[in-house]
Length: 111
Length: 388
Ligand SMILES: Cc1cc2nc3c(=O)[nH]c(=O)nc-3n(C[C@H](O)[C@H](O)[C@H](O)COP(=O)(O)OP(=O)(O)OC[C@H]3O[C@@H](n4cnc5c(N)ncnc54)[C@H](O)[C@@H]3O)c2cc1C
Ligand code: FES
Figure 1 (tube, rainbow over the protein chains, first blue to last red):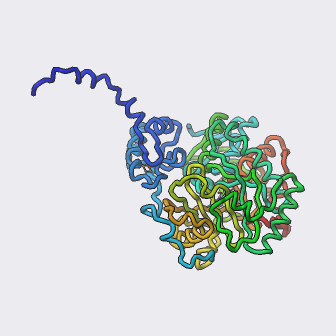
Figure 2: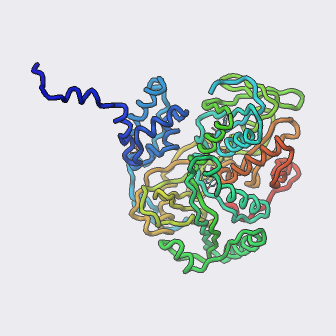
């Protein structure tokens, strides 16, 4: 394998991955970063639903499809509890956001 | 937090009523306060509610206490050191019959006499307040600016963080399964994690408080009733800038500052059969979604194109007169109840402080003694014409 002559390898070593990850937006729907998640887990918010109720992660239009697994992994990493033992939270209907006029009772009446 | 085997007081329930009680007990100087929650904090009705508060009630006591709740809510973020998402732009009460207009006028008169400056609004004023509202069929409106809403989960957690700072020991996933008792006094609490000896227990288990009381052999009429609610995707603020509320047909609608519209109504509107008396089954039904989106589209036609993201349900803590059940059990010294009668979000901070005052100081700065459930045995019900 040929060695590369540039200094990319050293630069690579200098990168602080932990810190870089902090800025990553974990929940794109609600724009919540890894840093916020990492701040609250040690304070005892170490189930998905607690973080959801505190930071709104999982309350966006995708209902946590984008962020649930990443967050469960992070809880597991920080608490040492295996992912399968962390309460993973409730998934609520509807499965996909749906225009309210499509479900609305057609009578259009109050009753 | 580690398990402790003795405590000065044990609070049961990690919703608003329980968490506020624990916070104020510790704040007023009690040393060893433990709070037990069967699931997680804010997992009960509190984390599922519409989180509105008001002083616009129809009975004197409720108006006085409602005012105290608003005074408290306005200062909560600062007192607890965490933002609770306060938003104040009134409840806009909508009447669809002349009879309701008459009731509004009576309520306003009583409210004004007690220092709550609520007033009737003209159709134009209502439209100005909530430009998208459909006025068809409406007969009248009333409003009081300082009523409003907050984020229920943040409010519950803000109390939890403040309680922790005051030294409260909070144990989640801890189910109270029984009590230790001697000749008419409570001596301890039994749980799935072990026992705690204590002379003071505060039952703030919300809709489940009747069941918890039964574990101590007490028959106290509190039961659960499932109420459903939905939230839309966030949209630009201004679709529903005030809390809309109607008693008949009953519904409420609001927009949170981050943009979601939240709407709910009582179960009789969409359930074909009456709800069973003790309905502890969480669940979400199509009938609710169909009915509620219909009402929402009708009251606020501009919501037609807005998408529903989520629907869920929570337990109302129902009492015979839909009023709070608060006090010490006559037949069981040291056993206290702190149940709101399905207004525990707004009432929590004030009820928590009053119960803590009663336990520690032996008196309260606001009148809550009428809420003792011994009224039911005497055939007395507290009347308020402004309960949905
Ligand atoms: C859809 C909906 C909308 C609402 N809107 C409003 C509103 O706008 N404004 C308002 O003021 N109120 C509103 N309410 C009512 C309000 O939510 C409740 O009255 C309030 O949350 C009750 O608070 P709580 O602390 O008594 O009960 P909860 O928040 O239910 O807390 C009780 C806790 O006790 C725990 N528990 C039960 N049994 C045990 C046991 N054996 N051991 C240990 N723990 C136990 C439960 O897990 C639960 O967490 C609404 C309710 C619903 C469902
Ligand atoms: S990414 Fe978190 S709710 Fe969509």
